Image (cartoon, rainbow, N blue to C red):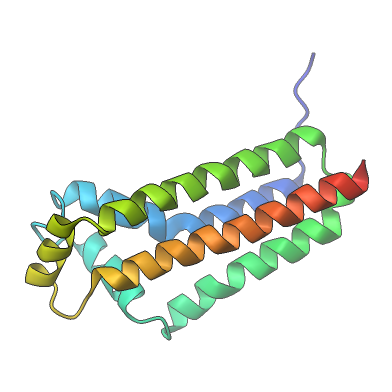
Length: 153
């Protein structure tokens, strides 16, 4: 059985979802490269500034990505194959779990103390708020995908 080639609409939706989750990936990478916030790297500095200022242009751009991919998905879902729908469902589920793991990590007392000591203008609460927002928005997108799939069936 041949695997169907992904459509352009699917690749656009997946690319926007990856862009939406990129700050989460960068934050987790920066944790690993700075030995758990013990040193300051440029990647971590960028991520901290992104999370600390929810009104920045970058944060506002980040907030419009999910409505954009939701609109594309709802508009073009009639052409999506079952494999593409399942792929997006799995992608969203994995990213929700990754955000939950990161949220638990940022609630650890040692992490909170390290952040407070090394980054006085930043709090772990802003990171956990971001992780919660990622979880909530991806869960809403997941429900939309399941509803579109049910309506298509």
